[in-house]
Structures are given as structure tokens and as C-alpha cells.
Amino acid sequence: MSSDAQAAENAIIEAFDVRKSFGDLEVLRGISVNVEERKTMVIVGPSGSGKSTLIRCFNLLETINSGEILFEGKPISGTDKDAWKTRLEIGMVFQNFELFGHLTTLENIILAPMVVKGIGREEATEKAMALLRKVQIPEKAVSFPDELSGGQQQRVAIARSLAMEPKLMLYDEPTSALDPEMIKEVLDVIQDLSQEGMTSVVVTHEMGFARRVADRIVFMDHGQIVENAPSDQFFDGEVSDRAKLFLEQILSH
Ligand SMILES: Nc1ncnc2c1ncn2[C@@H]1O[C@H](COP(=O)(O)OP(=O)(O)O)[C@@H](O)[C@H]1O
Ligand SMILES: [Mg+2]
Image 1 (tube, rainbow, N blue to C red):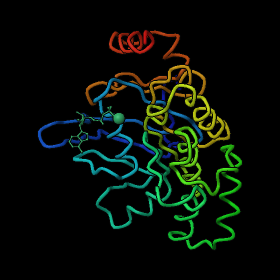
Image 2: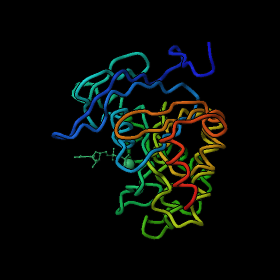
Image 3: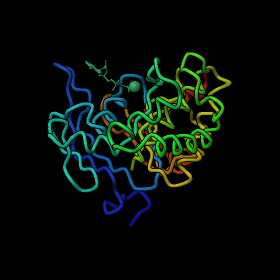
Image 4: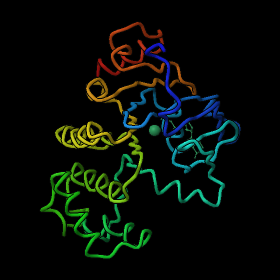
């Protein structure tokens, strides 16, 4: 098997010829890609190329028009009555944190485990505190989101996702809304999780992070995957002219 071939038996997500339109606009134009267990995929590409839409399809936040997406070998669809169960297995972190503003850090983290999984408050709190230590802000347990910096809020959002013990974490430009000095603290958390074996898909423009952490880089443009390569090959090998141009543009910023 060449280094480029992807082994389907290790795939947690398999997408086949996925198409998605908003009205007349076809945003995903035949996407086929596998996300392998315990690996980290970084998705890069120009604004509007369909990156968010693709990972929202993985998470069933969008329904697809055609093609198929398998989660652990089973077809999934946003219209299934069991879609919510699949959604629980997948954590998602957004650019703007999306914390509940009227709840403390701790309450943000224990809410879903208690309400959705029926875990008792004490156990949920214990787990939440362990997660807050992991993201290095246990002292913020009783703070409200507006008392936290952006970097701290994003780390709470990550802890909140982890509290549901997801099999896959999706990050949609997790550091794009942060001041530069806070980017590293969030990327370090994502990197640690990734190195512990959390299967991850990260949409980001942070190419240093991508190079350090990604197993594969997927480059999207106009709703298609233009490159899907092991990280070292993407950065050191031959890439398409479109990918080269994109890299030059973002690296010159
Ligand atoms: N809910 C929506 N309704 C209509 N158009 C949308 C919607 N979401 C995304 N789009 C359009 O789909 C295209 C791809 O968007 P998106 O997946 O957000 O790209 P990216 O994340 O790569 O910037 C863009 O042209 C965007 O305007
Ligand atoms: Mg996006």
C-alpha cells in the first residue's frame, strides 16, 4: 500500500462523493475522504471553499444532497431519528466558543453529561474538574464566560466537548477569534489531545500547528478536495499549483 492510500478499516468517518448545495450554490462537489481513528486531519483552504460545511456534515448539523457518510461503518444522515445518538459521539468546537453565558464554567461542562447521559452531579463535577485541570484552568470553575479571556473560553469549550467522551473531535477554526497571544494555549491543548490519540479534524490556518500535529492535510478549494496527503508530503513534497498559491498567500501574512 502506498503511503497515500487510506485504510478504510481504521476509518471512523468515511465520506463518499458527498454533495451539498445551498439553493443553487453547490458548496460540496463530490467529496470523498476518510478520517482514520487516532489520527489528526487538518483541513485548509480559502474562505468559502466548504471546510465548515464538510465538518458540519460529519456532525450531522447539515444534511447532504447525495453521496454517503459512514460513521464507524454505518451510514449516517441528518434526517435519521437516531442522528442525535451519533451526534453525541462527536465533539465540536467552534470559532466563537458558543458557551452558555448564564452558566459558570463548571455548569457549562456538567450540563450535557447530567441531562443527556443521566450522570449524577457529583460524578459529573469530579470529571469536569479533571478536565479543567487538563486544559489548565481549574481555578476558573466558578467563573462565568464573560469573566474569561477568549483563550480560556475556548479551553472551557474543549473541556465541555470532552465531558461527553466523544470518539471524534471536530474543531472549526478554533483560534481564529483569538488574540495572537492566546492562540498557542489553545493549540497546545488540541495538540496534547491529538497526541493522546483523540481522533481529530481541525480546520485551521495555523500552518505551524498543522505541520507539527497533523497526520494528513486536506486542501479544499471550491467545494472539492484538491490535495489529501500525509503532512510531510504536503509540506515538503510536490503540491498542486492551487495549494502552493494558497500556502504562499497565508504564509506571507
Ligand atoms: N447555511 C448556509 N446557507 C447558504 N449558504 C451557505 C450556508 N452555509 C455556508 N454557505 C455558503 O457555502 C459556501 C461554503 O461555506 P463554508 O463551508 O462556510 O466555507 P469555509 O468554511 O471553507 O469558509 C460559502 O459560499 C458560504 O457562503
Ligand atoms: Mg468556515
